[in-house]
Every structure is written in structure tokens, then in C-alpha cells.
Amino acid sequence: MNNNFAYLNDAPAQGLEREVRAMRSHFSGTIWYALACGLAFIPAYFSLNLISGPYWAFRMTLWIFLAGYAWLLRRWSGAKFLTCLFPLFLLLALAFVGLPQTSFLVAAIVILAWIRSGVCFAGKGARSLAVELGVSAGGAVLVNLLSPHSGLTWALAVWLFFLVQSLFFVMGPDSAAQAWIDPYKPEPFEQARQRAERILSAD
Image 1 (cartoon, helix red, strand yellow):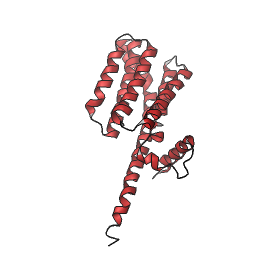
Image 2 (cartoon, rainbow, N blue to C red):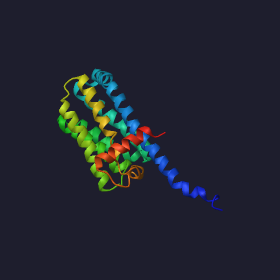
Image 3 (cartoon, rainbow, N blue to C red):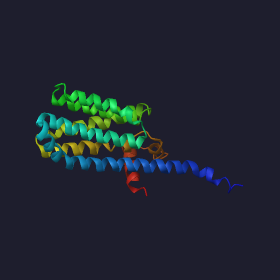
Image 4 (tube, one colour):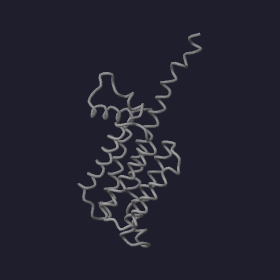
């Protein structure tokens, strides 16, 4: 009889394994997307520049990259497609109202945070908010420190920004991430390191 119901004991572990695999996929998917955006920035920018000029080409390139990442987040989370459209259209409208470039970049980061933690991975509580603030602000600070001023440096900045966003899936509040915390409850930075190692080493 015990053998007949043994699968019930394995069900939580199987569910956790699926979550771990999903988190690893999201983590690595963001890294690959960061690389794709970094490589695509210059050709995308110069192609749009032929149509709209440098000012709008820059904003539209960033909007396209953010919209692509929003689509990935929606696909990973299973959120409804329409729920992501309003934030994206709002950012598109802001691109054409004459905001200074710095203000537009801040708005883009806020919209990304809205889509990720307010739509796609909503309802995770204070921990999710803290992680969101950390990766959003971290990406912004990194770009500011780089001070991009050319197509090449902006390509590098875009790559680094999205690279930082992958940490959301390492430090995030998902139950899979919580399960990776050892019983002795190490410090937060140690927890993040352990989760990153387990994501990369998972089969």
C-alpha cells in the first residue's frame, strides 16, 4: 500500500524541480536576450535613424528591446497579453511627448518594473519589491557609471542593463528560490550566490 501512494511524497519534489528548471530557463533566457540586444543595438539604431532621425531612432530602439523583453516575461509567467500592452503603449506615448532623454530612460525602467513585478510576477510581497528595486536601480546605476555617448558604448550599456535584470530570477521570491536556502539561513548575499550556482548546475 505504501508503494501505491509513494508518488504522493514525490509530488512536491517534482513540482519544485519544475520550478527550478523554469527559473533557470528565465535566468539564462535573460542573459541570452541581453546579448542579443547588445549585438542588435547598432544595426537597429542606424536602420531606424534612416527613417526617423537619431532622436527618435534611439527611443524606438530602446522601446523595441523593452517590448521584446516584456513579451518574454509574459510568456514565462503566463500573464495575459493585453495586460502588458497598456504599460508599453504608455511608454510609447512618453517617447513622443518631448521628455528629456534621462527622463525617458527613467520612465522605461519604471515601466519595465511595472510589467515584471506588477503584471507578470505580481503578488510576491515586500521581498519582490525589494528585489525589483535592487535590479532596476542596479541596472540604472551601471548605465550611469558607464556614461554611454556613442553607438558602441550604448550597445554595451544595453547589454549590461539586461544582464543585471537576470538577477531578478536568482534573488526573486519564488518558492523554488526559497527552497534553495539552507536550513542554517545564511546571509542574503550568500543565499543569492548559492541560488546562482544551483541554477547553473541544475540538469
